[in-house]
Image (cartoon, rainbow, N blue to C red):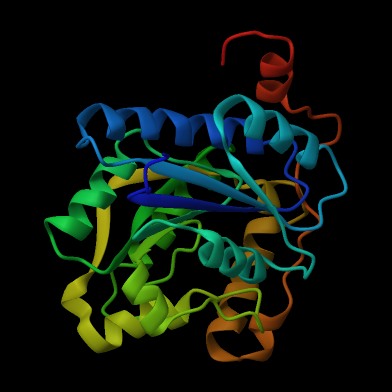
Length: 266
């Protein structure tokens, strides 16, 4: 009989052939750290929700499903909120950890998230983000947003790229807002902050590395993205649409998939 997982890691993925393999490898490393110190009844499940991908993403997910038991789901409606909600409904864990497909999970993350929920009695939280790629501008970008999230404002508590909540908190404050493409996590994180702010944690010692490709691969990308986020904060209309076409540089390949498919080590 399979163990009921303590944690369900939910990853929405749309046309993520360039990064989904390395993201899954980072989750597997974090699972190994957690399971080495966990009790006999604790386990982790990984659910990746393919959000109408048209590249090699489904092929990569099939390989990980066969080799390490990743649960592969499909979500026809476009949008990360739809995919996250579908993953949450299918998940079996009492703790839900949501991770973007272009974001690498720190090795200690799952162990720390479980400790926050079980020992610290936190109901939700998020981590800092760091630069997975890019140079000084990328590092400054993430440092700026990490500082913003320390402000005592409900809408500043926003980090869908790497966030977690208990099943009970998700059912009370969720789901993710499927009407929007920016701030879809506000019902959960901002909702808990307004209601019981001491039950929300911003763990600044954990740093998930996230891609800055959306800013790096378009002209004046950082300025344009900052303006878009600013509009989203002040207007609901600014939250509805967000370009999802910028995924990876031309010619990039899914290297970790190619290594696994050829029988090499990851």
